[in-house]
Image (cartoon, rainbow, N blue to C red; front, side):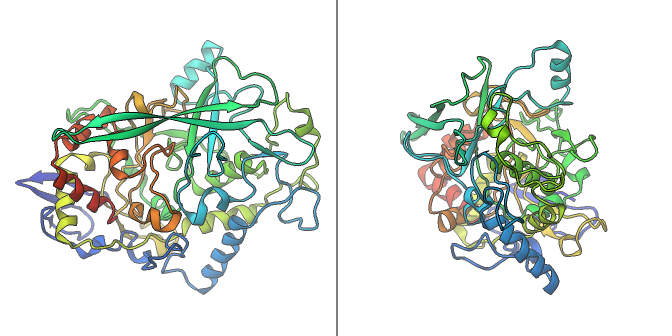
Length: 481
């Protein structure tokens, strides 16, 4: 059950019909201790660089063993087939990384290359072209089919390859500084990336190619997000902006790879995947060139003859990643704990929290939910009061954050899923940087705010009018999450 929200005389009313949550949260001063455990009873108190790698606190002994198995397949590299390690062989002839952990470093956030010579190890580039037929265009407009992959390079650019196969090319980036000035006269410089694909090995890109850079997001709390009742996400939709607040988030409906049905998307930068199992299968296939029961085709195009001829790890027609391994990785992904908040009761944090709500940020970053009580949800994830600060919907974030027209079902080029904010303040501790947004352009939380546009333009304008002290308080609150 998501909080219903009203601001009344500077007070946030937090009401829930089926649970006894706080009747009132005074965003100026009051402190609710439940907010400390952002991930409910599964939160971790670890504050080191391993803060994103701890299991859900409520896991029992046998479940902790399952978590360790999943961690092994998430962390350790896959190898080229054939190999004596037949449980881990079959690494795609073309790939981005050879292990999940290589993108999600310490289960945390990736980063964009710093310059043209830096490798894009924890980010990728999605590719698509505009559909040629009117029938396909109609299906795309209705969200009933994904974008068409680029003919020579597929739906994702792979910049690494096994011996004897040429990598597709190299991802390069250049940065342009963009100046923004606050109302009090202080100027800040933002950086805007331009990505290019160079040293192309399999011909030119289609002239209508759309490129969408994606930095690997943190892995924490994903099982809790999966456990939120769909009705609590859908109840927040306001596609036609009937309340006239400028915010019109919508759900993304995506294809379930097992059933072919359209289901609610929850994961990925555009909410393009419905479950952690399918998200993991997509990453195995796209990032590492590994087949699963959900995505059984090798990640090669017709233009890549050497890729098509290369040995695979498939034996007797079975996928390279067995269902047992896929389920183990999904279980691991479901149970990475969210760190507790720091200094959540401190005056400067609470002042920043009040400013967050005054700016209307909670219109997209919904603070709290109670997870589902359904028996289909693992027992330790049920009925948890959590504070992810996301509505799980996709929003128009303005032209500056557009990825050039790349679509994912209903999510258009300017539209992105509201990312959860929990754990954002631990990014530097875990990953040694503070780079945010889908392409890593923001170098701190304030830069991330200043790139907001579209439905968030009004909130950004409110922040631009804040005093230096207020901006510091807002950042202090965000970094406490």
